[in-house]
Length: 173
Image (cartoon, rainbow, N blue to C red; front, top):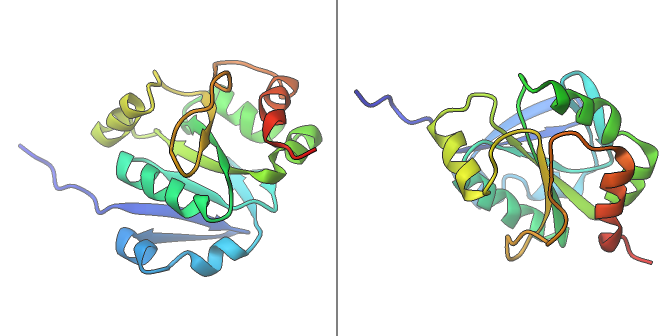
């Protein structure tokens, strides 16, 4: 028996407000004003990256739409594949992303959060599309082409200085 499919959505968090937009709202400019704003995001109760727009997706279509949205402002995006049940994802969100050196390196890189908490069919399809086994996985992509930059993928445990090293080619001199 087929379950009804949930409507496509992209979640956007700005400060402590949370708005869910439909694909139609996104396409018709629902996030245009939001992209111009800065934000402080909260994941698992901890600030992630200050003054950043963060897009949260859980399926392939929204992942592509999120990249399109971010491409108007950023050349690269850090794709952060995580889940609420992933213990190390909380370490990344609470300690690694807020690290001052990581925050400086992220000034010119967007954050695109892939939430696979539900591990449903959409999440599994997205993981296959991203060639990822599961969380925690991070890598940097070209927002216009959607291609992963070589040497930027991290799977499992890593340290803040490792992420800074991977982000350094995207930081203007």
